[in-house]
Length: 395
Image 1: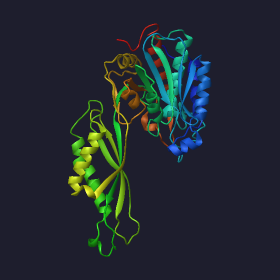
Image 2: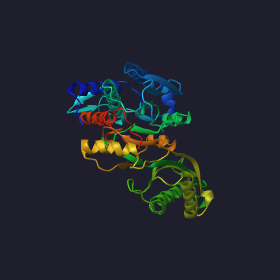
Image 3: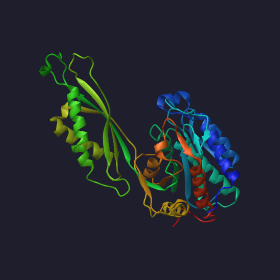
Image 4: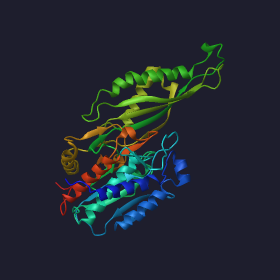
């Protein structure tokens, strides 16, 4: 596998710096829509992809916030292979480095999105460009996709597949330390309210304390529910997890609270539908508290898991390249979720791959090791060029 030249490394580095210097912060759907968060990123990438000779289509997911779908007209005659990464980042509050300076120190680039996941964008785009310039593209129909609103729940990827977009396989850029990831958990977020009865705090037995009920919910999640969801295990992901992450209740120090709310973060291994999980949770919590009337589930939100068989052509062939590059011999699983969930649910054989460590994502001093950006570029370039004129995703 050939290494990038110094000039090619600088090319990837310059592209990453350009992307980091463009703010594309998404904190809430309301903020992102107001600020048209990814608009400048989409404009920059449209120009960059056009200069690569690709035709670019915009899918407006929200006003000023389009997914981009790019391809070389007439390239490829076989199945469609997608290379994708999201354009948005998390907010910058509390950062200890300049979030948009793209400063380089000690072989690392610092700034919001360097790791999650503009490093992947730079690697994928540079590899595609170099393979195209060398005239060594596979026979698969290549498609580059840049999505919006991944950080608030994969809204861009979901909109893409719901629009009828189809593909046979996809490499989705996320910080995986340049290793192949074929499985991730499915998040299930619940908001729960416990129902009590108010009274004066000097006469607590005349009321029902909703906070005390919520304390029992916390106990339930940490013991019987934890044991219940731990019965099943996944070879790459281990067991499901569930934790209470926020609690809000009470109105005044001398009033027994009549209501209390909590949010619960669950991460579930593939193989069990969310509806069944919620039904089991509701039934078991009702038994634990002694009555269904003592709580309500106010909201739930979930996203699909990923569980791509390692013997499919794309993960198998990418693993072959990674084995030479960094010694990886078997696929990994991760606990976070990504655009691979909606893609996989739509029947697209998907995996995660990209430079950077997830432990650096969303941090106050987010950074990516440039050597990993170069290695990710080399790995994708090797995958593409070693299959010049042949299919990557056919058996």
